[in-house]
Structures are given as structure tokens and as C-alpha cells.
Image (cartoon, rainbow, N blue to C red; front, side, top):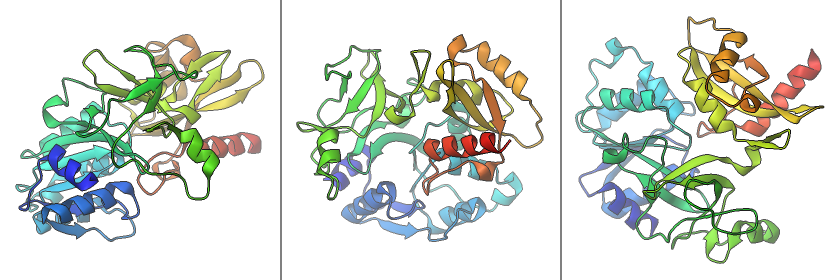
Length: 332
């Protein structure tokens, strides 16, 4: 069922071929693998244990793949490959690109489209438990910035619920519940967690989102990442987006730090772009111009790119980062 719906959403057929880069244990590669089998298309698997962007580009051209799916971090690494090294690589057959698993910056999307001029850029939101939930198509990318699209074909309308289980109005954040023919049945040997995830036929993995007037879904943050400072709710993604807009910021993640007065305060971990030396005062001033006062970071910690904790698919591990920063602070 996932394969059928993915083929419809992406317009895939037998002539298409995929280069699968994400780990095969991840829903992303697993579901695209089944889709291309369903279509009769060729599948190439990038089996290196670590991601080599130059090799990935070379392989993409050599296999003649029409499709690949990467996370924003991997696309940024591709964009860092010097133009001179890309010269002999043929991307003419690349027609469909997927970007998922983490929010993508607008400048990243534009640069990817320039690198692959014959390709359309798709974006999706989903999970292992719910598979694909929403899809944003190439013709919608810049008309609905910040959105992850609308419900995939075959899905029931998304429900956004408050803490009491009531649907919230458009424009208000709520916990996202989805229902589709391929929702999972439950967590292995964990009935309590399974019961928590479901409301009837609807499933949540703990993401907070809102719906605009046109029905497009915008992800706000993970429920577990919420920072509560002085009784105010702060979604780290909002602070991350503000800081990421600074030209010196290559990567950023925001977590809550325990605070005796406010309960929690905002702490940001920043990876600077090569050759820049922007300090914390400048970034805090930048944030103050774009955010309410209680959302502005009280502290900014600078990390090297390889210090930012990520899982195998490139997602930043906020819980691990929070523990890492706390250990650093305790060691001072």
C-alpha cells in the first residue's frame, strides 16, 4: 500500500531508478525500496558506512538514477563539493529529489535545484510508525515555504489536537494525528506506549504542527523538545530558524537548560561556517531583533560540525545534546 501511494505521489514508473543512500533499516530507504520494486524500476544501494558527498554525486551520475532521497545535512555536504570536482558528473537523468527527516532552509533548496536543473524537489513528513503523512510537490515549494505539504493520497484528514483531545483551529499548534491504511499496529511488547500513540484509528508520534488556511501543514517541533520558561512555551525550532538565518551559522540546535528562576532557559549550540568568527553577543543580538524576549538564547555554545550529535539519518539528537551541554557546564 505504501509503494502504491508513493508511486502515485511521485509519478514513478518502470523507467525510473533510485539511488538509496539512507540506511536500509530506516523507513525512508525501506519504503522507497519497496516502491521501486513495485514499479519495476532499478535500485542501487549506496553501501558505504559513512557518507562521502563526492562519491555520492559520482555514483548518482554513474548509475543513471532518476531519484534519490537525502536529509538536509547530506544535501549541504553535496553543495560543499567544489564545482571543479562536479564537472564530469552527469545529472541529466535526475528528475526527482526528496528532502526529508529535518527542516530544510530555503537557500539550501534553491542551491539544490541549481545543482540539479532537470529535477523537481519534493519534501515529505512521515515516520516509521505512520509512513508518509504529508507531501509537498515541486510546484508548491516556494508558494508554501516552511510547509511539509498536505495529506498524501489515500490518507484521512490530519487531526491537530490540544491536550484535552479537542481539535485546534487553523493557525493554532496542536499534536498531529494521522490515519492511513498503512499505520503500524503497535510497539513491540509495549502496550502502554501503543495505547498512548493511538486515538481510535489515528496515530501520533509526538509532533506539534499547525494547519494554514489552505490546508498545508507546518511542523512546529517535537512535543518532547518543548521548553517551558517562566510558564511560557518555547518551541526550539522557532529559535533555530531565527539563528539559522544568520550568514555565519552553518548549523544550530536549541535545547532547554535548567534555570533556578525560570525553570528552564534557552540554550543554543551553533556550528559556524568555515572562515567566520561570529561571537555569541552578535548572535544573541540578532535573535533579539527577531524573537520575543523570553525566546532569546541566554547562552550560545559553539561546536565543531562533528560534535553535533546526530542519528544515522542526520537528525539532531536534542536529548543527547542537552545531556552533553549539561556535562560541559558541570565540568567548568
